[in-house]
Length: 432
Image (cartoon, rainbow, N blue to C red):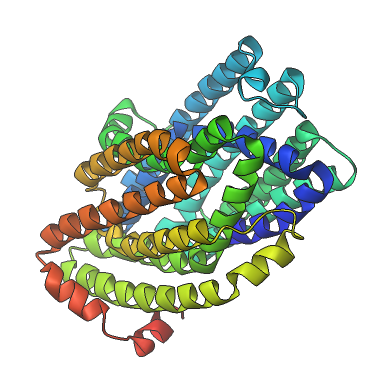
């Protein structure tokens, strides 16, 4: 949610200083290292869930081994990732390939290396967050994640306001992220006496144990990168960077109305992991149904309000510099609605680290959807991209519902019937 609100503030700022072309190029530049965020192989998420289940099962020693083994692995991945990015951006003329006019190869090199460094720091923050979560301090971990995003955004804004280019903006983000990460680490060591950084409990055996669910978990960030960053790059290559600015702004507006609701899914996830670790399967089923009810009705209300106010908000937000596209807007709104709904259902396999099958389906659907965009964008322009993204969300929703229903032995008709029942009282309980 914090990221989307900052994107709302980012768009008029960057349009004012860099214009539509410069903003579009920035989006394409950030797409490159952002896609590398999946380079942790889904390890931080897998470790977080594993530690939560281990603590719930009174296996503190196992949680310590998971934490230290993950830390060592993330350090190795970060070194390889930084070396690879620096080499690739130095060798290949990416600025020319992407038809940039405001950014040269030198600025692109420095910016991508800095942004990749930020991703490496975020890997460590994800692990720190896992240490908070497994002890039941989920809210504290979330608070620090928001703080890190805010400080990163402030660093970028300061650089831009002082006339900085993409390299300065990236440097500001790294500085802000580093400050937030340091605060998070200091708080953790002040309250956590056993789960600490180190190599004593790290083991190859533990790394192998995390390997399969981590690789499977990789499918989700990889699929997200294909969906979000891939669509940006394809629109930029086929239609031009200025079209990326318009499409991305509409997509942000559609997501910002519904993204806050995804906090419900993230809140439910550690609760499901704890219940599974304690062999309390009935609680998982209750959390699924209640969460689905709340997400469905709040998403429906948010979409109605978005359709009514969207055009006015968009024009004020972008100062009229970007054109409002009704077909694209409606398709992206529907896409966000469907995505919000299945975000609860997918927590069942993910929270319990039994997501191997659905992860493969998720990645396959995203790849097929990206392939469809290659055909749809030249034919229908931005509307083609939005139509393809909606189709992807619908297919994923069906796959998630089938998978989760089978895992919980819960008929889909019963799930949908209960979801369609208003749950005002349950909303109040979940938001506490």
